[in-house]
Amino acid sequence: MTRDMIDIIFSNMKHLIFQKCDKGSHVVMIHIHLKHQILLNKKKTSDISFYTEAIEASTALSKNRRNMYDPDEMDEEQRERKMRRLLNKNLLKFCKTVHNHVDGMKGVSFDIEQPYSDLSFMGAPHKEMVRLQPTVDSLVNVTETPPFVVTLADIEHVHFEGVLANKKNFDMAIVMKDKTVVHKVGMIPMKELGMFQKIEKMKML
Image (cartoon, rainbow, N blue to C red):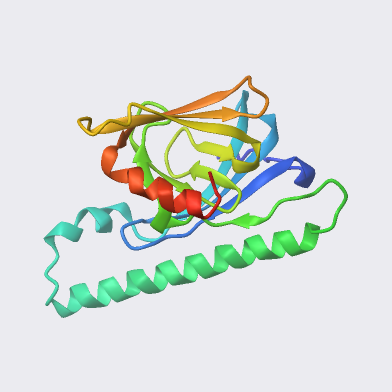
């Protein structure tokens, strides 16, 4: 088996996103969003993810058949929680080590970002519905393909379309400061509208 090496220049990193593994999730991830695209597998990309699974997929699929009173099942649940905590701790430590090593270097400016799950909302930035989450510096979904990463500081205006009492969904258009890019997020459930009020109070959007 061959393994390709990827060289990532620190000064080309715009966002370093640490997506921890919570209950209901089986993946802990480090996602890097670049300032300038690089070639990966002969394709240009601005996004690179490194991840590991906390539990085996077969275990995840069998969750619905578990008996919560079975001692073996309870032990397995405890092992999974322990594994999640361990992976979250180790990968976050790795991110902090990298950041501390390069912090202050010329041309290097990024922080370790962690999504706020309690400020998340559903929407379709591409074709599929995904859960979008703000961080301190970005609005992201990095657990699905293709990833969605928008830098908050580069946003000029956020426009909501179709916000009517008799509709189930509305759309959002994110206009960037360079006026050449507009990110559209469709099919946002109307019940999520209150989440944007919370995000606005925190001066994120």
